[in-house]
Image (cartoon, rainbow, N blue to C red; front, side, top):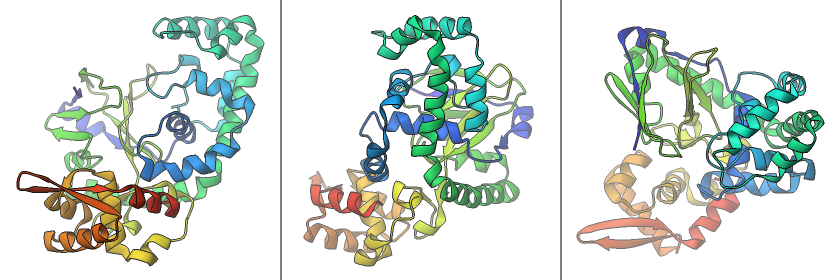
Length: 335
């Protein structure tokens, strides 16, 4: 199932890159990541660092921002605003608006979260919720912000180069090929919630918003007072062989390159690719790692003999998988 975004020629001319990362959107995605265990290679290192920082006053955020699906409209963290501006806006939101948004949101849930019951009883808690968002940003996102901005700047240069040299359709086709595919004049999105449907931009164009924490599935929204937008993952050309690599939590925190020092850059990349693409063939492994099939086979063999990966046969096809020891090594290295 895919979400299909239909473009006209006018939409293509109005499609643009956002000027930078949205700090509260990163927080929103980060809170969701802390509630599930997907993509351990990319995010378990960050999860381990984040867990001790969680404070009791942040608990309502985990009730109101689920691992999957929308949150209540009044708690929209996707806008391009600062944590200070958001705190001021939410603190001044009328109690009636909060109550209406909560009831609409809860109507689609199997049960009423504790934070909703508390807000129903005491609307004066909204400023405390606004402060919780501000605190969560300071604890979970702000420590990495200089590095996030550095990575975003490099990614923007990469995307603008694609746009200048090859045009907007090349830019769309290379945003996130696994989950975003371009088949003119339609952009197909595979979302985490398996949304299905057709969206016609009708001349509004599309805003492309970079994200570090949203490294897999794209998010999409069409605000009433702004341009429709989707997210795409920031990539880091410094941590790949011939193609930009999706940023990992280890990259975010400037973790030492212990894994590359131990295994070598190419072999570390091969191990990472096998972990991210479990069941990949040698040909697929080579393509993802940006090396020849012969080199991929050689490095995979060394890793397998060291107990870091495994190999299974599917007819005549060999498929690679990460072993428990290999995953422990990746997580401990923060890759």
